[in-house]
Image (cartoon, rainbow, N blue to C red):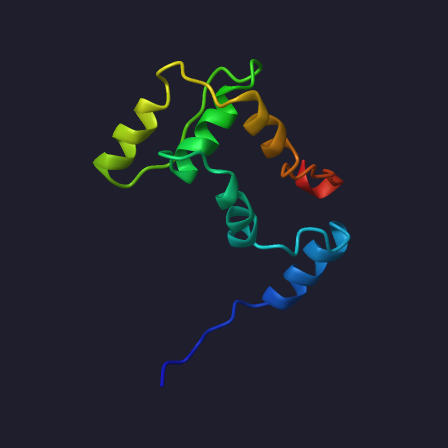
Length: 107
């Protein structure tokens, strides 16, 4: 059996974070991503849709996506082809945006 180590004060840290965000950040990133899967247009991947959503914002001049493999680099570059998501997709995706309320300690 493998021993699982817990960081010192990890539970206290989680409790403080949840309290400061009124428990609204308790939904995992995986849950958020799974909620978006039905919105992915045919022939597109979730990461491509995410990048195209970000690029659709005229206030965004640069994005720096993470990548571990050459195929990630190639697919990220392909998103800069000028093709945009349909307006209906952008409207639907905006409904999933997390409007975070910054706190003093997160600034």
